Length: 335
Ligand code: NAI
Ligand code: MG
Image (cartoon, rainbow, N blue to C red):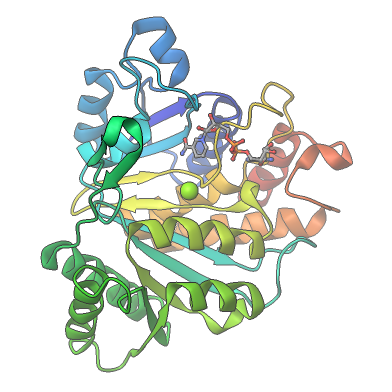
């Protein structure tokens, strides 16, 4: 099995090596191919995502990505490499699970997965300015093709994980031509999965229930922007950003990446929590390589390691434990 590994910037360089260590415990023959991307790469080469990196990712078909720093001001020639990479790899589904983890910041009983359409919606990158900069317009594109394939992903996932219900989240009352289409196609696809219950919520109501009663959610099927926002909200119930995994999935390729960014405030201190990236690697095993048994072992080892600690937040440094100490505990569980 081949894996293209992009550590990226900041804590990406600290947590990704831990995930590789953990993967090697369950996959001793794993072939790791390193590639560069991110802000540091841009500074060194003038290109945040070198062609060589895209070629390596495409040939390996599986990528583990740490995080990259993106400035909040325009930089000529720079755009976020992860957004470009998702597009180059055609990873049309973004799976973002949140389940209860044994830390005080997590909510008992939560076990949901946001299935986010990853290629269109308001993220097609078609924005214009007119009126001497005083009017901005963005295109929101929803297609039958993309809606159909993401709906199938959601229902197949529900089926394979023994889940009961798919909730379609949209704003079709205000945007009947776009979200209305997404909703209609989702209900059509639902007919192929009669054993899975289907319901729907408007996105604002969904946000209310996500905060008030997160345990009512199972699979959430939703367009790009709503999925981005709701999955970060849900991550709070899983214990925090340091614990939230994600997987971008295409037909034959996958990019695993934690939900968090490069965390410049704690980078270089050796205290970043590697749980999010380890659980992302486990998602690669489960959903892309179809190896559920080692994925289960990693999930169990993470649970056991978290249960042993006395964590008051997702930041390990609070109780004197570093990234590598935590990695040692997980690897000991797996050896
Ligand atoms: P962030 O996720 O990097 O950090 C938010 C807060 O969570 C910080 O206080 C950080 O210390 C903490 N945190 C995050 N991950 C943690 C971990 N594993 N262990 C312990 N604490 C953790 O988001 P922020 O600060 O908004 O962005 C920082 C940089 O990351 C920016 O340049 C942004 O563009 C980039 N970013 C990149 C992403 C990606 O590569 N996919 C995603 C989000 C942000
Ligand atoms: Mg986000």
